[in-house]
Image (cartoon, rainbow, N blue to C red):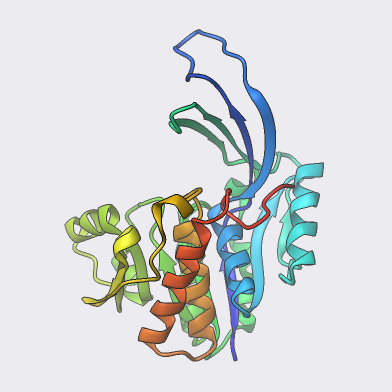
Length: 276
């Protein structure tokens, strides 16, 4: 059974609730302040380890209490955190989230230490090999994602690339992704780019997902059970990476990913019990 090496972001989400979103220049009162674990990289790492994979997290946090709390959270859940570096001149990444009574939100992302991940942080990829999965998203510098994909593939690892938030990557890097994971909107932008991955997974929310055109539906989730869709895509990717590292075939891996995504909408936050 291979490992899943996740190169990505660690964000702390600060969430408050308001009666209505403020207009420009206006001040409104927030009710409560939750500090939740987030960031696509760490979300996917947590989902992969919850699916039974041995997981290594590569990323950066600041020299603050929020960063140390996040690293401790990952470690307590079995994630190898030796490749998470403390960047001493900037804070841990944060997302400032305001949610109104109708469920609409505004989000300000402060990348912080996530923007400081460098090529030097990728040395752990020199130890990957066949059977391992390198799981990537695009919330750290794109040049680092590009280097991670190339280095992991050169070592024989399988590259799983979640092209989110969407950005244009070199065609040779897209071609290494087996699979490249996108939602419907990202798939349209990918088509316009003319880059072609080794294989393509497109997610359709409650309608399931397709791998190179073969579509499966996931477990049925009743509307009354849906509490928060925030982390569903990351749960899908993490479980998919874990299944592939375990040597599972395409169909079974997709089924596992769909089940994880369906389960994720049943809890608040991008991760189960996300409070930091």
